Amino acid sequence: MPIFRSGEIKITALLCTVLMTALGPRIAGATLGEPEITVQSDVAQFRASIKSSEVRVGYRIHEIQLPGGTLLREFVAPDGNVFAVAWNGPTPPNLRQALGKYFDAMISAPKPKFADHRHLQIQQGDLVVQGSGRMRAGFSGRAYLASAIPSGVNLGDLH
Amino acid sequence: MALMRALRMSLSAALCLVAISCGGGGGSSVGVGSGTSSPPPAGNNVASVIVDQGPTVNGSPIGSVNTLFTTITVCAPGSTTSCQTIDHIQVDTGSYGLRLLAPVLTLTLPVEKLANSSNSLVECTIFLDGYSWGPVVTADVQIGGETAQSLPVQVIGDSRFPTVPANCSGMGTAEDTVIAFGANGILGIGPFELGCGDCDTVTHGIYYACGTTCAETVVPTAMQEPNPVTRFAADNNGSIVDLPSVAPTGAVTLSGSLIFGIDTQSNNQSGPQTVLTVNGLAELTMTFLGQPLTNSFMDSGSNGIFFADSNIAPCTTTDTDFYCPGNTLTLALSIQGQNGVMVNNLTFGVGNAQTMLNNNPSFNVFPLLAGTIPAGNSGTFDYGLAFFYGKRVAVAVEGNKTSVGTGPYIAF
Image (cartoon, rainbow over all chains, first blue to last red; front, side, top):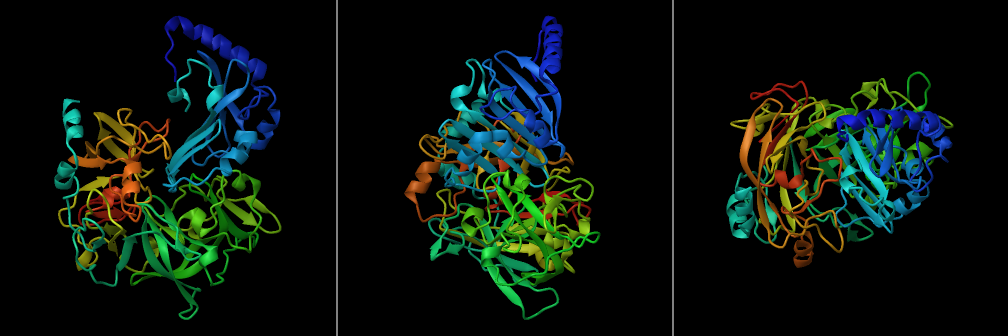
């Protein structure tokens, strides 16, 4: 979570409220590489609810609570497109839904030489998918489009 | 930090002396720098285990790295003749339950039926890197001299259930062949009975009730695939992975023992072992570079040592999530259980992943293979199978008392 200076809190809260009002009911799961607003079908697909929306320097985050307990975070660039998704919870989200047209690139990627059942690292063109986790403890991961990351955004923030 | 810098400058000579010298254990290793060599301890509670090139498919070994295997015998429930022995079952202390790959299974085993609907119970097992779809069957399973009667077992890729629900296939790549899965099956013997703590009351997209179509379902705990050790008639409070040490450069194979029960027979006594209890997620704290990492774990199912250290160069051409330092590093680590017990002064080695593979392409044991941990897991240190090399590691199941503690715990 970002640390705001006290003067920014109200502004951020206000912005969040504006965003939630404008987009909240419709945005409950944007899809990687697609516009923020064109994703209403994902709400139904995930049977999800939006937990929070937040403005950070250089991008916006929508945090989505999936029915099984998993949190899905979607990162939206100033151009309005989703450039990253990240997840954390008992099971991964449906990646075909979250990755959209990039899902096929993920599953067609060659199996890494050091593959095991605990780590995922895929790089196919612009797409990067990373994850880790295990049974009972849960899973976390992320997918992003390397060329679409807004300038100034740190990879370490995408989780 | 000065200590760390100094440690990093010490090379493999120090590694030979420091990192790999702790512990004995039964078994033998083959290849350069073989370690302790003695026959595995005999007993009705012992199965042989080996780190090798993995199962053979179409005449060629699949080429495994740091993957521990054993052999089991599966029988139709109640039968002593309708049985099959299956090699290269992965031994995994990070999962729960026995899962077999349908392409190697010649038996047809009965599928579990849900009581209220007579629908078949089918599971979408998620191992992170994909999904494994198949029914939960029952079988009598023999491992070493132990038997679990009517054990719920998953059969992955069973042709009786060819249609994968979209919510399962949406997890990624299908892992329903021996090559895709990396083994003929997997034996999950972590420190709990079940892999899902609440699947009897919550659907997580894991279990499905299948009739003409499949729908997500809750499942009574007795129908879920348990850690098979918990279903043995005796020696059922945990297990011990006992592996000899191996040279830093690695080896072609490494053989040891999987011993069932803790303090139940003369060959599984705890003795002076140090007990580190784990939380409900099977996690404890490892302190690395001065940072306590509270979501850490030891895991025979991880093929490397995975942690974050931005000072170590990752590999550049392939396998960029693994480390490729210019010189072999020796790093310090401490491990603290949830019971507060701390093990200090551990060290582990990090070698150049590309160099070690290129130099010894026939090797399957690489104690210095290490890699990065993905962002978002900055509180995790995943100490994989290399942790078990040269150690006798006990995994006690939740709620079970031994002479030195109560599970869930890891002791060594």
